[in-house]
Every structure is written in structure tokens, then in C-alpha cells.
Length: 198
Ligand code: IMP
Image (cartoon, rainbow, N blue to C red; front, side, top):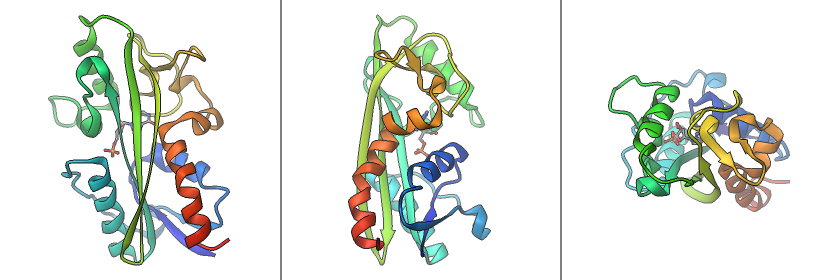
């Protein structure tokens, strides 16, 4: 069976991608499985640039087909911020996901609700010196109090209004039907089936 490296050190993303890719006919590996310790600086101007840079760096370091995800949360009342900078959205270095959620709520507190927002995901797959791209998005709103304990990042303050549930209140199966990353993976499935053998 062909091998596919999940090119991220984010444990939340690894869990979701392992579940999302379970129907694909490849052996999934993580950087830890192959003792690969690689940090890639995300200095691109777009999600595509960052995802491609990560996928190519992990593919070159491992010799394996590698899949990277670059994602972010875009809040309309913050003019699309933090977007590409979602993982670093805090003035202090070493801030946690909880610090970033609190910082976002602080920046939103004087803005009228609803605080509409969407998550964006770009997946890049580096294979044989080429990069394949697939993208997805999901829409909801930011709420002023945290709800739920599943997931990671901004999940506890991102609400799907039609379900009245935050992403952190969804089980993995539901998040993996609705999320930006799920939609990007669905868009990548034809690529897997044609290029990675089925
Ligand atoms: P990056 O793709 O490594 O630049 O990180 C994207 C950042 O966006 C993550 O660190 C999270 O803060 C946020 N993010 C991306 N996807 C999700 C998600 O599914 N739930 C919550 N936060 C997310």
C-alpha cells in the first residue's frame, strides 16, 4: 500500500485528518511515526503558499508523498482577521489557544452581533515534485462564551447557528462532515483515487 505522510505537528489536525482519510487506500504516517522533527516557517502570503511550502518541505525530508493543511478563521467584523495568522493571533509569544480565543473576544466585544465568520482550509499534497491543491470552507458565527470541549483552536467559540452547537460541542464524526477541512479533503478524493491507486 502507498504511504502518505500527514505533514503537520498539530495534534488536533492529525486526529481529524486520520479520520477524514480513513476511506482512502493509503498507509497514513505522522512525522512522529518516522522520527521526523521539522518546523516550517509559515511566511507565505496565501494559504496555498503556506500549505505548499509545508507539504514540499516534509516530502523532501521524508521522501514520502506528503499532505499539509493551512487553515484559518476569518471574522467579518475583524475585516477577515486573523485569517492566515490564526495560529499566531496574540501579541504575546507563547500564547495558548485559550489566550487567542480570549483575545478575539476582547477585540470583538464592542462590535455589533452576530459576529459572522468562516473557517478556510487549503490542503496541499506534494507528490513526485508536483503539488496538488484542494480547498474547503464552512460558515457560522463567533459567540461570546466558550461552549464544549472537543476539537482545538477556536472550536469552543465557533457556532453553527442551524445546529445551535459550537464546533467543540460536535463529535468527531459530525465535525468531519461539516468542517472546512472535511470539505477540502472531499475535494481531494478524486486526486487520491486517480494518483494513489485504488
Ligand atoms: P496553521 O494552518 O498551522 O496556520 O494553523 C491554523 C490555525 O487556525 C490553528 O492553529 C487554529 O488556531 C485555527 N484553526 C484551523 N482549523 C481549525 C479548526 O478546525 N478548529 C479550530 N481552529 C482551527
